[in-house]
Structures are given as C-alpha cells and as structure tokens.
Amino acid sequence: QVQLVESGGGLVQAGGSLRLSCAASGSIFSGNFMGWYRQAPGKQREFVAVITSGGSTNYADSVKGRFTISRDNAKNTMYLQMNSLKPEDTAAYYCNYITATGTVYWGKGTLVTVST
Figure 1 (tube, rainbow, N blue to C red):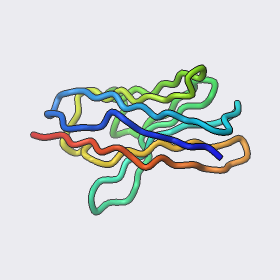
Figure 2: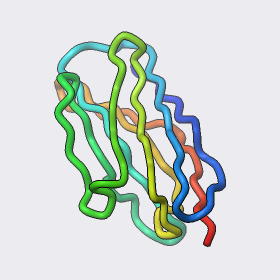
Figure 3: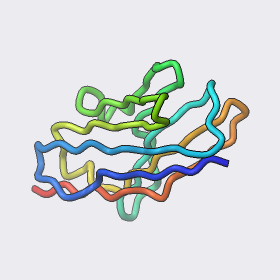
C-alpha cells in the first residue's frame, strides 16, 4: 500500500505561482511513476504531468513552459511548481503513484483557485 498526501494549494491571482507537494509513504519501490492530474468543477480529471523514478518528465500541452514537475526520491516527495497561473488552472490537483506492476494510488487532492 502507498499513501499520498498533497499540500500547497490555495488562492492566487492570475500570473502568480504556487508549489504543490505530494508526500508518499508506505511500500515505495524503484521503477515507479508519479504524476499530477487535475479536475475542474464539472469537468473530467485530466493529466497534468508525470515523472519517472529516473527523472524523465512529460507534460500536458496546456501547462508546458509554465509548470515544472520534480521529485526528491530520498524524501519520497514529488513537487509541481506552477508559474504564470491562469484562471483556467483552477481545479483540484491530485497526485498519483504507479507501481512497476501498474497499480495506481491516488491522493485526496488539494484545491488551487486562480482569481482574475
């Protein structure tokens, strides 16, 4: 089992920045992927970014150049640095952890609100 706890959400003005964290605990092993998804009110959950245990990354087109995903394997923590935030970035942000065998764990989310 893996437990995930997100933090760092809040209210920010458009153009501002936030840094989200996702702390993982439990059965953490190498060869995993960690990622961020978001879900805006009335919309489906969508992919934001992913990072492998080796540090390779991939981003949704909507956040490329503005968001940066990173991880500290020693701390079992993943981060999402969000810059140049837009009102359309408003959503609940969820982290996930995917094991080498494909099991997916989710956190409970942290809310990001970007005001105009």
